[in-house]
Image 1 (cartoon, one colour):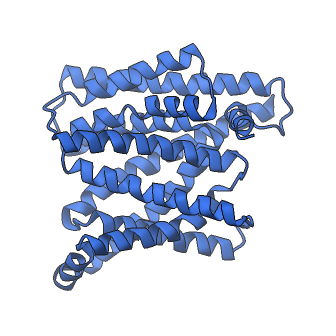
Image 2 (tube, one colour):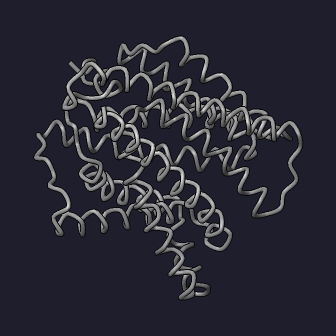
Image 3 (cartoon, one colour):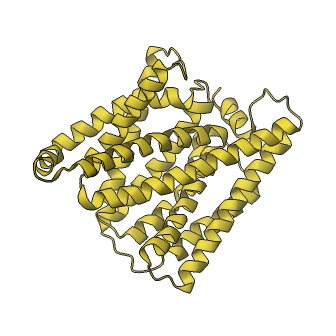
Length: 327
């Protein structure tokens, strides 16, 4: 029983770290992009720091990469492309719609995650799980209620980006707990260099690299360079805790956690930037937090019940579902 309790506490710890890094990096990115308005180059810095960090930990002996077959290496390449395209669609769509509209549509990520898991993985969820998603989705809508601005192209790209975000989360979970069972650092080591090259190519093709060179020649300071380095280190930390939390929980829990993060970002923005918040926004924030807490609690109760009758060495409930469906 103590082993089960330790496993549950461990999942809560990684989810807590995911929130801390995600919120911190979100706010830091906003601050950095005020002066350094080059999202693709910033993403390239993130993936470069991830690559360097993983290689350092590898040489220090913190993990040993698994030998993959040619087909499995192709899966890693396709995953890195999915990761890069997901960022691209998100960045482009955010320029075509308001932040409030973007957050509301992205709040549908858990719904798409459930649909993808049911259609392609033959995974099933309890009725309570479906009901727990409702306050999360509706809550983000209330929390971001305001003037929704969007174009037709922006709407389509935002929906596409939301679907891709759900696909990426599901695929990540499959890679971590499915047949490959890669360690988070192993996955990050394989993905980061590929994503870095793709980001640099895209930045070059769109002319962003040329603008970065002009900006750096005239405006780059030691403070800004240090800030970019710290930002990259935070992104590396977020990737580690995000992949680890995904492996220890489930794809659906991670998408719900992402929604709760969006609302907490609003709360921090209100506190830090002294923004006005009305009763509708406050109601939405509370509703989303309650829904997110209910979803996590349902997952943990299911895992606890399963582990109470299974040997400790067997996979948890979420992992078992994914292992079975991969056969």
